[in-house]
Amino acid sequence: MIAADQLRHFTQQIFLAIGCSEADATLAADVLVSADLRGVDSHGVARLPGYVRLYDLGRLNPQPNIQIVHESPSTAVVDGDRGLGLVVGPWAMQVAIEKARQAGTGWVAVRNSNHFGIAGYHAMLAVEHDMIGQAMTHAAPLVAPTFSLDKLLGTNPIAVAVPALSEPPFLADFASTAVAYGKLEILQRKGQAVPLGWAQDADGQPTSDSNAVRNGGALLPLGSDREHGSHKGYGLGAIVDIFSGVLSGANYGPWVPPFATAGFMSAQEGVGIGTGHFFGAMRIDAFRPAEDFKWHMDTWIQRFRNARAVDGHQVLIPGDPEREMEARRLSEGIPVLEPVVKSLEDLGERFGIRL
Image (cartoon, one colour):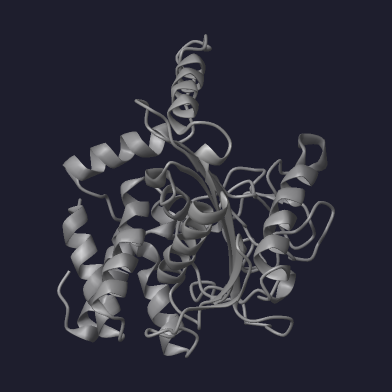
């Protein structure tokens, strides 16, 4: 177990070492460690070596000039100048919040960014302003659309955060695939198989090989196969890709550049600029009084949480498991796999920073 503050400090020091400002390094470290605290280990400090590799490859600008390149009263396009998505994302979300403050809703498309961590972190930024937050991003092509042998989409997550009155916020944060690729990476490190329905092999057949995607296979959309609704997961992933890439001017589809940890892939940019995201903020009182809405959100949450459940289970509200995990890990520390510890120690040795 490693204490969250210890991981956060180490991560901040690594970002400082590659040239990030104090404020950006602090923010980026907070975004990464928040993923580990919430149990989303695939998007936490395990990704830190990948960001450093992006820097080594010249694909990451540690001192970006993030700016709005086009806007209307309620919309904007932000150019991230190849900055950390961990920094570009919150910057763009603040633009969406300010647009919503003025116009009722704010919508921001981002181009020329990089991997932005967990989508839920960005969506939650709107909640403290009595707004509903939305965040989505596309990613490198690891996913085969229904009936396809070609990888054309990323895991393309969507997050929606909704404030309540006395209940914790509702937070749905999920990939549009059967599983995020980071989960396969974790099983690869452990040398374990994946459940059927997560991936297909190079011939399009179901597989339990955790290395299938590296060997010509692909991740599967949410639903896994046509009979179980994979066309719906494909549709969700396509929507995220269009909003994040086609609308923003970033790359899209098979041209989205890979994160550095996907060493078996090569960047094939050519239809846009970098990686894209999409953010939204909706001011609740642009629809109805905020306190009234939040009282009814409490009622909604309590009714669902008290639903009759099958034996041995309880109906959960999106965000419940992650919130419980965060409380436990703040108290007990964060479990970090030995291969991840080794990769962090190697980074620390390179920059003279002790984990």
